Length: 151
Image (cartoon, rainbow, N blue to C red):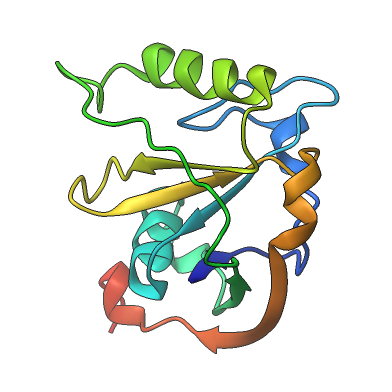
């Protein structure tokens, strides 16, 4: 299986999880996490949805990474989440934090808040099976300025 990521860092170390909260985790020292998407287009939508500020100051390009996961790796899923989970970030963070603390698996499947019929995957780089998840390649791609309404 291939998973996708957009990041300035071409690795799976997950250091950003220590520095900033995310939809599915709260930041803390030693808490590493890597967010991945099931498709490159979803990774792009997630990246754009998280951009803040003046679109004229956004970067000109992004780094797309392909990550491979062996077919025999068990990937649990959060399953169906009742209620308004897309607006309840405290709830989704609690779910992700519990998964990270439980160290049950290297990957955990969660729905995308911006495209709820699509799946994102969280990688715990400190789980023993994380070494089976491999960074395959990355390349830089120019943003299509229409995404930011800049013509």
